[in-house]
Amino acid sequence: MPDASGALRARQRTGTGIGLLLVLVLGAALLIALPDGGGSDDACRALTVGSWKADAGLDAEFARYGDDPSRTDDWTGGDGTHSVRLPDGRVLWLFSDTYLGRVYGPPNPHGESYAWRDAGTPLVRNSAVLMRQGRLETTLPAPLFADPAPGEWRWPVAARVEPRSPGSSEQVVRVLLWVRTAGRSPWIYGVPTATEVATLSLPGLRLESVVEVLGQQLVPDPSRRVLFGTTLVEEDGWTYVFGGDDGRAASRPVSHVYAARVPEGRLADPGAWQYWSGSAWVPGARPRPVLGDGRRTGVGSAFSVVREGGTYVLFTMAAGPEGLTSVASYWACSPAGPWHGPGKEFAPPLPPGQVAAYNPQAHPVLSGDGRLVLSYDVNWLETTGAADRLSRNVSLYRPRFLSLRLAATR
Picture (tube, rainbow, N blue to C red):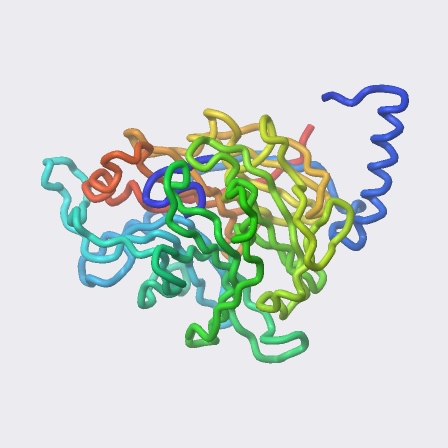
C-alpha cells in the first residue's frame, strides 16, 4: 500500500524590499484565484491537533473481526485503510494488501501470547469489508479489483458516493485506484503507473467499470509520477482529489502534494478532471505541487485531508526519522494552498518490536461531536522476515484508531 506493501515504506527566508513586494504580489494573485479554487477566507483559521487519544472501541472491533476463526475467506489484516458511508448507512472499508484466511491461538507456535496465521497464507492486493452500525459483518470476494495485467496490481484509495452522472437521481460508489507495476530496487514497492476510477453499483456493490483517468507511463522518472486519490474532499459541487509522488522510492521520502478537482458526478470522466497548474485549475495540465519543498515540508505518498469549517487540515507522517512514529499536520484555506506547517507532531501508540506507523487517514463517516477519527497503519519495520513476523502476530498488520480534537493554533 502507499508507504508500504507488506512492509514499511514510510515516508528561506524571504528578503526585504523588492523580495517582500514580490511575495505580496504573488500572495495577492493567489487570493484572486481562491474563489475558483475552493475555500473561504472568512471562515478559515489556523488549526492543529489540540488533543488525541486511542479509540479502543474501533481497535477492539477490528481485532474481533480479524481474529474470528469461523470463516476462512475473510479479512484478517491489511493496510491502506479508507472508508466511505453508503446511502443505506453501511460503511464500506477498503484495504490494499490484505491477508485472508484463518487465525489461530494464542499462543502461537513460538510460545508467544499472540494470535497467529499460517506462514503460507496468501496476500491479496486489495479487499473490502462491510460494517453495519459499528460492527464489521462481511468481507466481499477478494480481490475486489483484479490485477490489470501480469506484474501490475491495483490499490484502492479514497472513495465517495456520487450521482451516476451530473443531476442523476441514481447513485454509485466511485473508488480511486492506484496502479503499480513490479520493479527493481529502489522500486521494491512497485513503480507508479496510473490513477484509475472504479464504479460500483448500489446497493449490491457490483464492479461495473474501471477507467484510467491519468496515466503516468510516459513520465520517464518514476519519482516524478503522480498518483491521485490518497484523499478527497467534497465541497460546493466539486470533488477535490489530492495526490502525491513517491520522492525517493525506498527511503524516507518527503513527497509533494498535488491537487485536482472534478465536478460532482464525473469522477469517472477523465475529461472532467482539472489539475492545479500552479496558478489555476486546468484540464490536462501537468500537475504542480501545492505543498512540499523536498526537505523540511512534505508528506509521505499516503496522507489525508479534511475540511473543518473553512479550513483544510492535512495529516501525514512527519518528515525525517520521526516519520516512522510521528504524525504531523498542515492547514490551508484552499486545496491549492498556501499550506502552513507542519504543526506540532504527536506519536500514536505502537505495539512492541521493530514496528512503524504510516498512512494516517481521516474517517469523517465515523466522526462527530467535535471529534475526528483518524486511523494509522502498522507494519513490521524491516523487509527481511516481515512476512514471518506478521504471521506470528496478526495484530502487527491492522489499522489502529485515534479520536482527535482540532484546536486553533496560538
